[in-house]
Image (cartoon, rainbow, N blue to C red; front, side, top):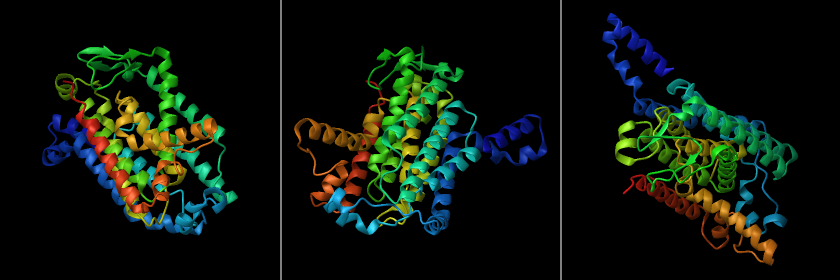
Length: 385
């Protein structure tokens, strides 16, 4: 909406309208930095101010988070037993505020913004069904794993197909040469690593599924996933902004350039602001959990944004905490099935450190620190030597 206001003002200013001359401040609305900053501020205010109302509403609906029994998690139940009944589905605060900010501050018809927003909402709906099922059955088991993976992969395939065939996806360049969206790049190399062709569609879908589940696995302690989301989203907002400016992308950093990608900075900064606002209520001791409603949606949105920016491989570095959490589960399951022994006291790995004597707040802050340095590392290697 704000960009539409700028366009109306620009037309009037070009035509010499007096009112446009007196409202020259509206010229600021064309700039990504201004609209991204407004989106961040808007989502923070919405999440922070309306959060208590949402929490009271969730409590009245009795959507408390089921906690796994002592038989399932043993000592961890003693550490987290007090969290039983804390309202879940708080992710609707993040999704709702981000959607409002994108509609007001962004250009929602930009194809990259559209597909990222749609993936977020679609996975958010899947997460909502999962959370509702858990609450209804009063169990930690929601939608079956196979069914969840089926819908995640389906959503990822639709998004990847859209990106593959969308005209704007043919607008990438690298080192002044055309770059297909199916070509995989990495900042340390000036040229594409390889071209996947049609195989990029399932490849992108796997990234969406993997990141969505990784964020979901990270969401096990108060504010842990939220804080890491802020770091990753802010890092990719910087990357998207740089990738949308020809001088920085083509002549200085030598990263994939597409003029339409820059608009993702508004979406990502809206997610940053929503994360800060949600963290206001989600920090230890949490008054609300984001649930699968938030974690699945956030993971899918971050993955889609990374794909649109042509920095999908960089997500392994920038989102290292998410990767670390997912890897710990994979290694734990594989080790137990192959050898009958466990590598960690418990997976995901944040529970391992809890059971080794770290206080919950220590685990959270230390993982935040790792996430911050991971984001800085991702930015640092953008410049090709």
